[in-house]
Image (cartoon, rainbow, N blue to C red):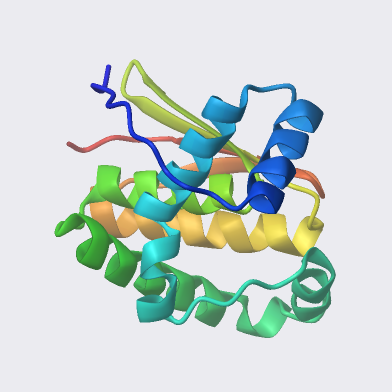
Amino acid sequence: MNKTKTVSFRVPENIISEIEKDARIKKVSTNILINQILFDYAVFHRYRQHMRIMPVSDDVTRLALNNLDSRRGDLAEAIYQNIKEWTLVSRMEFDFYSCIQALETFCRVSDLGFESSERDGVFSIVIKHDLGSNFSSLMIDLAEKIFWDLRKVKIESEKTKSAILIRTISSQE
């Protein structure tokens, strides 16, 4: 468990009112929501300008993914290289686990569900989203690259238009 520190900030009333309102809607304390906001900044948003990451709506993402089949591999490669650069800049390392943590952070700050586990030599990931079947296929392509490049293992996957299950099928470590 991380140590905590009590700090005081002066925050404009309208800003704290919005945060308190969101906390009530999300059914969490204001303290928990502010910690989530600070965590997201510390692990992701402070690197956005350096990485030139722009926020894009789900509708724009879906539209961009609609006719992607012929270039999906190129996009998976670009995302992989972006994760690699971001991980090197933010964590000063790049290996399988730092890559998976970066993917988890990206999913979390993008409001996508992400779960991972490793049991009996099998590593599994579930990503829950509402971006359609093409997004599922893109994430599978990305996972194939991550697992092969960083662990030299192949994966098997199952997908729907709103969820992906990825797991290793062989381990050579």
